[in-house]
Image (cartoon, rainbow, N blue to C red; front, side, top):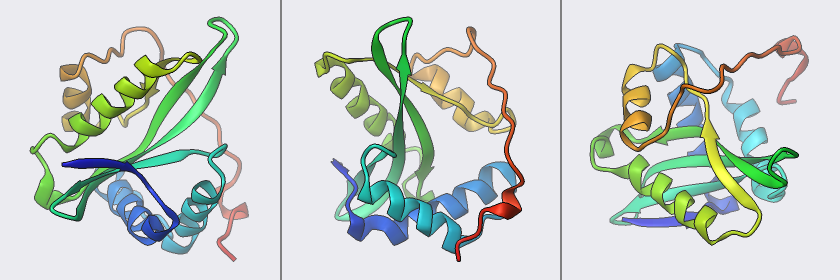
Length: 156
């Protein structure tokens, strides 16, 4: 398995992975053109996020997106894992674990990143189990959200 940073050439696959992930994990139908536009945006500007890909035999087996949050409490960045997806044929083969361990190594080597966080749907039991097995905890914070009317954001 090879872990690498995503490139602009990966945009279509990354966007399609997110459409599939939303449907599988939360039964949410995403519009591919909007997701593709968002994917192109972060691939063009690492300030918006950095995606990592796991490849097995030259095929994309899984991916995730990392965004950054500044912590004034810690005077350091915290990385947020988003958009996690493992292609069905590669599930239960350690794809997410390899991606996660890669991020942990990058954090360990960094002078200004303190840790990793993620959020997951409460109903995504398999994902929650995976995150706990890798040593992540859900004991400290609860995530709340408010979103502007999603119909105001269109892919054009």
